[in-house]
Image (cartoon, rainbow, N blue to C red; front, top):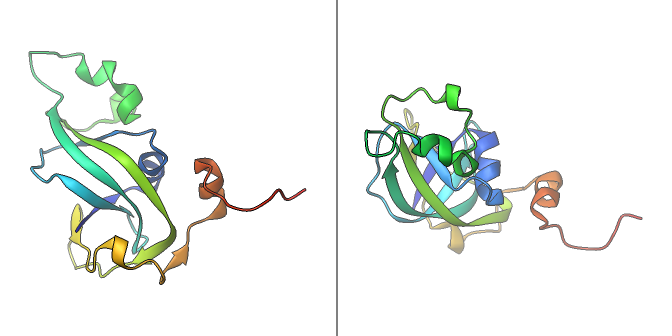
Length: 144
């Protein structure tokens, strides 16, 4: 399985299901389940399906980026790419325990994750309770 390295604020929105387009400078041909890694954390926080890759530049529809801001959440002036691509994501799953992985030197976009995430959930760090609250994933009763 591949893991995608993303800035923490975007990773949280992806795992919450609110960010369904990841804006990148290049297309990807990869499809299927991928891990979501918060950059600098050394941990995988969940998974998502990468289902498509759409060019959001060109003469066909110059307003595509603007019309779909609710899918990518990036301020329009903050997109540094001349020809951006939308990596289309769906069906996010956040893991209760963030799993460590081996980060190879120089990796900035993709890393290989072995074994696949579904096979190992016992080791790792508990995902912050406030993130679970945000996602409505916390179990148990009220604090009152």
